[in-house]
Image (cartoon, rainbow, N blue to C red; front, side, top):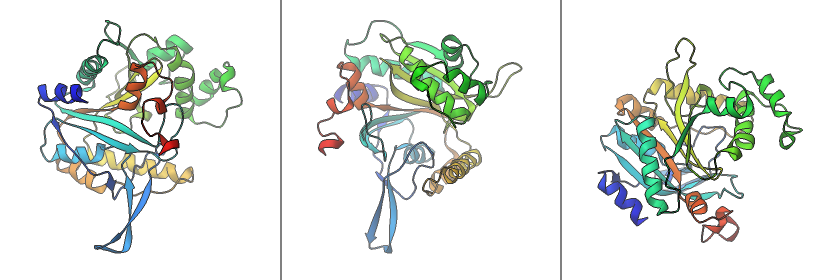
Amino acid sequence: MSRLRCFFAEKGVLEVETPLLSAAGTTDPQIHSFETRYEGPGAAQGRPLYLATSPEFAMKRLLAAGSGPIYQICKAFRQGEAGRLHNPEFTMLEWYRPGFDHFQLMDEVEALVTELADGRLPDVSAKRMTYAKLFQQHLGLDPHRASAEVLAQCATGFPALAGISGLDRDGWLDLLMSHIIQPRLEQGCLTFVYHYPASQAALARISQPAADIPAVAERFELFYQGVELANGFHELTDAREQRARFERDLAQRRVQDLPSVPMDDRLLMALDEGMPPCAGVALGLDRLLVVFNGLTRLSDAIAFPFVRA
């Protein structure tokens, strides 16, 4: 923590603190919020609140208010996430760099992780691979153009995926990435995977398609020893497009019979007022401790994991 704070202080990045409770939950169908309820002055009938799954929305409101470059170390909470590399409460580092794109932010992520590793990483530069190149290299297909049927047929060639059916195109892509490609990434060095399918943009910008190049999400993920450590975006700043994505998320939640959650109107107002072009990234500090220390489970890096909370 001390080296981390020194790293950002030297770069003039301001440490901030934002609330863990919010009136809005995350709309992402893949992420589930803890819901609680406030009862007291100002809410005679009670008011539902959500524990933050990330400080992202509040930090973007600060950016829109003119904060400049910022970072935060905080707890984040995700319902239903417990396992070897998951804990429902975990420690997240998130930072935003106005004027950066996702390539510049990858440079800074590599510099920070190398600094925090304190000699526990090989003295080599991180590898950078596009999502498409990985799929072509390991599975021989184009993930931006392959149909759900083609992806499902590919999955049948792997015993670990036997018996799985009924997924949509992104579901098959996620399955092949997490179960087949991710374990095959070079184990001894940091690997950035970037330019995910446009359908997986989340809160990232989408590039303009060219003649033979499809639109892609301007986002990246960082892996080490087969473990995902960070997820970064060249951030979407268009309020109208962000609202449309929230609405698509909510429609998908209805299809999947998931609880509806209120979208963050304050974030949309901040985007409408003007958030500077920037790139941002979230990094799991607990996972970083796991891979740096050769551990196998997140619970080995947390003093009080979920089972002992």
